Length: 150
View 1: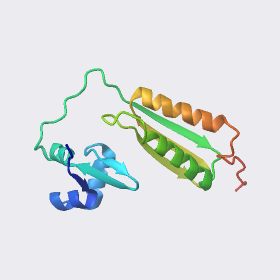
View 2: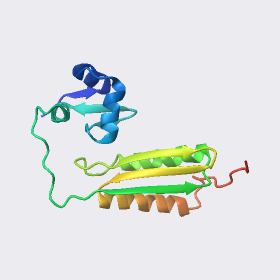
View 3: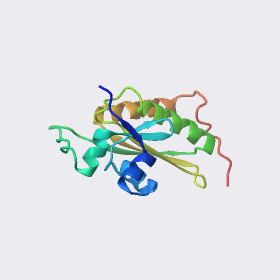
View 4: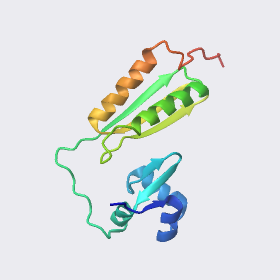
């Protein structure tokens, strides 16, 4: 059975909201969405849940969520982009679709610092943290730690 999928623009139009408001709902977790490339897609069921037309999802007994912030110092823009892409690709593949990992990256150019915020299932978060640890401690050239003094 195939469920209808809507773009952020279509949802905004249907609800009479601004596109930024819909994206805010997605980022805050108020509206579930799947990220495909650089675009979000919202299922009809998730849209109905937001508007109260469908029964709200029941909380799964024993479900836990972990929030983690990883700070990586000495990272230039290029390395931050590479590491961010790796983390986002890993978060978006091979995990339980009912409880997806949510990842946000922020790079501070002045301080040469990357912060990675991870929200999700404890096991999936642990997997992602192990990947980060392996990449950060490997001598694979992904991160060029030579940052010029400001």
